[in-house]
Image: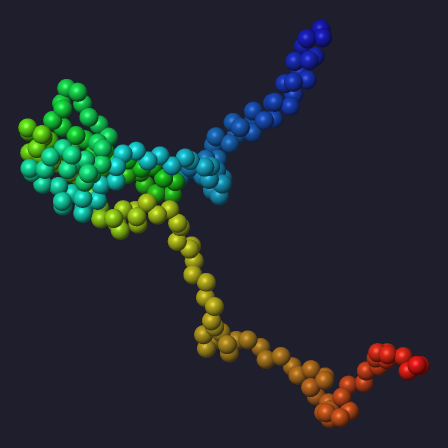
Length: 184
């Protein structure tokens, strides 16, 4: 009978944790956030070479393999059975942005570029804007009041001190202790 008691001792703290974990499954929204405001960390996955429009514009038939490697970098995929084809595939999955995938395929004949196929590749500026995960502010904070809002503010009543005229010589009646003793 001692074994079941120990088992209950370990099971009792695990039962609320298991229930909370199962209840949490229904609280994950379609955007991956938990309860609408907690977003778990997802590791950024980047594979391949970033190929921009400027790079593709420099790619032309007749370039050697070394020139293509200098221009685009090492290909992500080279196939032993298709040595005359280099595939440059780029994928990125970043939290807060849509996953992206692009492909550029270069075909060779006699170690020279014969043709190439490319997806719609962005400029460098468009690429940076597409992977920027900063969220725009949800609402604009207005720091100035318009005329209608200024008129709606009640004018405060004048204070008692402002109502009684005081002369500069008399000033308010205050009593301070002496700073130094007069005994020397």
